[in-house]
Image (tube, helix red, strand yellow):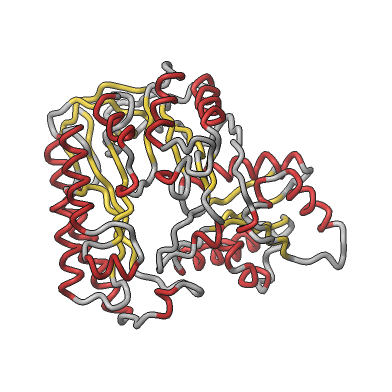
Length: 418
C-alpha cells in the first residue's frame, strides 16, 4: 500500500500534502497515513485528533504520522495520544531529509516520538515542483510561506515561521509546468501572499508576480488569488485586476472585524474605513468583482455594538462568500489572555453572522440568474464560475473543461445551470 494523506485547513496545506505524499514514498514509506493538521482554531485541532483516533480504529496496522501546523505548535498534544507513531514538524514534512530521518526513527526502539525543530530558524521557501493534485481540476502554487505579523488571535506564525517568498522565476516555471499538465486554473497561495517578495532581491510585490505569470504563461486560462490582506494590495495588483481578464474577479479578504477598536486589539493593520474603501476601489476597477471574507465573531471585549458593526460590514463592503469563525482562544496568543466572552454568546453571534452571510449570498445568486458564466467543471456534476460561485451542471461535463453556462436558477446555496 502507498502513502495516504489526510488534509485539514488551508489551500497551502493542500499543496504541501502533495509534497508530503511524494517525499514519504521516496523515503520508502508504505501502508502509512499522514495527517496534515491545522491549528487555526481549537476546533481544527479537535477534528484532527478525532480523525487520528478513527484512522487507528480503521487501519490498526498502518503507520500514522501527524504533521502540519498543530503538530508544530503543540506537538505534546499528539505525542500524548497513543494512536500516532510519529509527530513531524512543519519544515521536516516537506524535505527528503526530514522523511529520511522519520524513516530511520522507526528502526530505533528508543527514538523520540516527535521530530519538530524551530520553525523560526527556517529562512527560505523553495518551489515544491508539484506536477499534479490528486482529485483536483485546479492547481495550487505556493508563492510564500510564514508571516511577519503578530495578530493577537493568531497562532499560525508559530506554526509557519517568518515570511519567506519563492523566487519569481521559480513560481512562473511551476505555473508553466502545471498548465502543460492540463490545469486551466491556477490558484496562488501562501500564508500572507500580499507580503510576497519583501525578502527577495529588489523586493518585488505580488502584483508584479501576477503580471509576470500572465505575461510569460500566455496559455494559462485562469489565475486566482487565495486570501489577501487588502491593506497590502499594491498598485500593480490593482492594475492587473482592472486590465487582465484572466485574473479572476474574486478576492477573499482577511477582514476579521468591522469595529475599529476590536481591529486595534486584534493588532490588525487596517481600519473599518480602509476595508470599505478598498472594496469600493476594486469595484470601480472591476465592476463585477465578488468578495469573500474571513470574519471572527465574539472576539474578547467585543460588545453588541461592536459586533453590529461587523454585521453591517457585510453590506457596506458588499461581501458574498463569508468564512465565519467563532472566536477560539489559542494558547500562547495575547487574545487568549484577554477577558473572554461567554461561549454561548460567541456561538450566537457566529450564527447571526452566518445568517447575514447567507442573505448576502442569496442576493448574489439572485443577480446571477439569467447570466451566462464561464464555469470550470470540477466534477461531472458541478463547477465554479469566475466569481467562485458553485454551479450544479444540467448535463455531465468532463472535469477540467471550461464551459459557457447559462444560469437558470439557484437553490439558496449554489447556482443551477440551464
